[in-house]
Each structure stands twice: as structure tokens, then as C-alpha cells.
Image 1 (cartoon, rainbow, N blue to C red):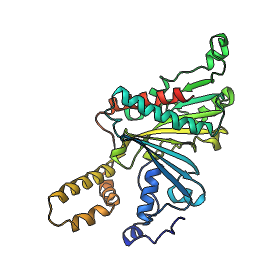
Image 2 (cartoon, rainbow, N blue to C red):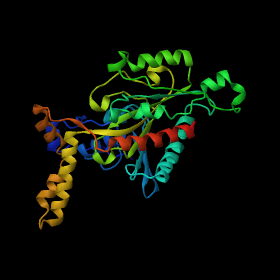
Image 3 (cartoon, rainbow, N blue to C red):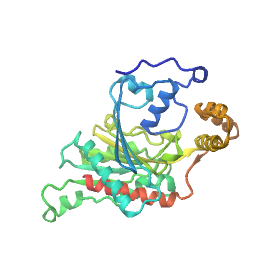
Image 4 (tube, helix red, strand yellow):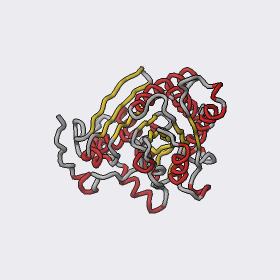
Length: 329
């Protein structure tokens, strides 16, 4: 049974930290920070979660928001959220990429099967700007998707019976097209009539450890740009009348997150050398993100940052996602 939330301590109460004042698209991060802010030891009311260790490098966590209480607590709509943590995805060899893709395929197939049959048509959408590397994951994946709609329509004699009709598109971004992505997709849905949509996008994270090493799946759709406070129109079953599965990988964090995480690492190093850890433990137990962000904001130093190896990381992630999608459809 879920434990009743305790009253938040003075630190969080003074700051109004019940709500989210940080940039992250990951449901599991929002849940963890809400639990910490409200000193909840067990699961939040209205949320179910389960972890599964696939092997020493891959952990799958499934979070399900079951009612309005859970929805309100972490600011995510009701539905299923699956997080796949792959420790070596950043420096992955081909066999590790294939292993991660296999896990993604299995999880994606489960969530697809919840909504449509195995022969229903699918539309794969790659969100993002191909000219901005951290935001180019979606368009790059689209180039690798094995589309079949045109073959089934015009050359059916060359297609095996039972082949799923798959189409794909990268609609660009508002700044280059002048058209909201939702408006483009509404036109496609009206004409192509897919039974399910898979949307791929780059995400923002609350932890540098998750950059390019975490994959999130959800069946609640997506609000493009929400993680970097550049919110666009929602893409979901509510707006398109078709089930929407969102697939994303964090590629950026904000500077305040980076500084906060670096501070934690520094404290850990100092703790190894210090005779008394009382003061250091107190600093580390507190979340210093808000103070750091407030210090950076007046000088406009709270930037969105990405690793210097982002080109290579995007290529690895593109391969994992494309293989996972192609093998699940």
C-alpha cells in the first residue's frame, strides 16, 4: 500500500519545490525528484513501477501512471513509460548496439501490441532539426526505416503476405517550415490513415549520466520541445485520434544540471579524503539545482549543453533506434 506523502521539509517548502522547476522529459526522473522533494519512501499514489535487470549493462524500468493523483504528482499524462538504461551505449561496439536494439524491439513490440494488431499500418515520424546535431536523432532514424507502403500499394506481387504497411516522414521544425508539426501530421493521418504512429525525438534530462544512454518509450504521445521550454503543439491520440507511441533519448542537459552533478562528484572525491563527512553529507543530501539555476539566470549563463562527442553518439543511437523499430514492426 502506498505511503501517505509526508509534509515536505523546510528547504523544499520555502522554495515551493512540490512542482517541477527543472528541465527533463523523463517520467522516471520526475517521479524520483518528486519522491525526494516530498520525502516519500514508497511509491507515489497513482504510480506503479517495476525494474528488470536484463544484464549487467542494461536495466529496464516500467512506470505506469494509473490515475489523476499520479498524473498531477509528476506532471505526466496517464499511461505507460518504459525506460531502458544502457550503460555502454556511449562507447558501444556493434554487438552492444545490437543487444540494445534487441531489448528496444521487445519493449516496443509489447507496447505496440497493446494498441493495434500485428498487421495494422504504422507511420514513423522523426522530429527534430537535422542541421542541429543534438536535435537530429529523429530525422536520421527516418533515413534508416524500412518503409513498405509504396511497395504494397504499387508492387504487391513482391511483398510477402502479412507484411505491415509502414510509412515514414521527417516533418522538419517550425522554424524552417513555418508549419506546426501537428498540422502536418493531421494532413498525413487524414490521407494515409495509419493505425498507429511512432514518434522519435531528442529529449532533455535531469542527469548527465543519462545523456545518450537512456531510451524512453511511452504510449501517451509527446509535446515537442517541452524539455527545453520551447513547447510546441501536443502530438498524441487526443490530437490525432490515432494511438501515438513516443520514443526518445536525452541528448542535452542545462548548465545548472551539469554544475549540480559536478558538485556531487566533487563532494564524493572530498569525502574520500576528509576525516569528517558531516558537512559534506549535508550538502550532498540537499538538491542545489535551484540555487545554481538562480545564480546562472541573471547573467543568462543557464545554457542547454551537449557532449562534445555528440556526432558519434547520435550515430550510435540512430542505429539502435532504427534497428529496434524495424524489427518490431
